[in-house]
Image (cartoon, rainbow, N blue to C red; front, top):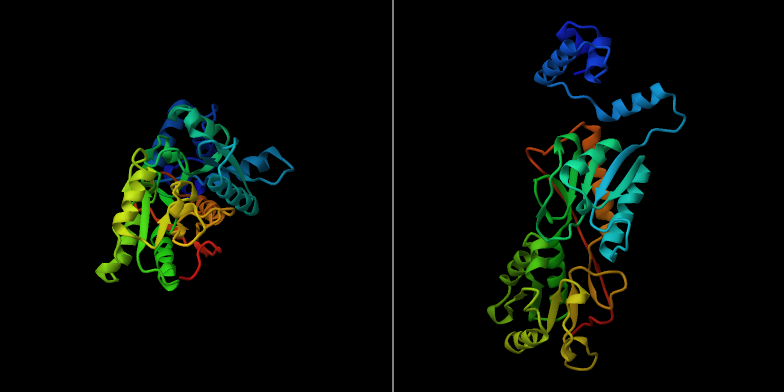
Length: 332
């Protein structure tokens, strides 16, 4: 519904309706409140991109209008780890290509009311939620003001559109590559928080692949809390399950055991579900830069369709990972 159509239904002039919706003081308070109330009941929703563009035209600015987006992620603007750095770079590059500016904001520094005010003051139209510092978390904002897309599963509330790595496909690729290389007893080592960040999909995908192989080749996964993820417990698990290759989340979670870190005969090769560019192991490149770019594309689509607030039916866009080989993972 346009302002012209709204004015015709409310029986006011287009100028009066437009000024009332913008809260202009020269429209009487009673008339202004009536127009705002009835326009809401009629389902009128202004287009934020068009409004911002028209505001620039009225101000006769010479600079091309570029809508504003926000990427909320802990430690943005400080030292970023390789995961967040790749994601941030992909998001920033795609935002520039599509004509948006992208503000990095650390949400932990503000309460919800203050954060909403900051976003509105900066003219933010879309909010991207990056990886949060906790594996399962929630965030409070006036979501009705923004288009919102989250990355991965660390934001559990509210339920919004999200972009994520395809975890099930990733672990299937890792397991099948191990079998093709001649390994028959494939182990999985995960901390509970790592599996929670993947919404439990890594463990689910691993167990599904195990069911298609004989029972004597099936290896019980090593699942542990952060405190119990120790070399001693890991060595005990290896003696009991006898894996000939082990799939880990990241290289940082490989225990310091000669069987795992050595290079001689009898060592057990490691495969990573989240391989970073400089890791000396084979595994899955989750394509964080592509995930960041896709998050911006999803935000842009919501903005162009004037979709704001918590969606009634959230969608999930999955980005497949890429297998990256390494000499540390030979054919058996």
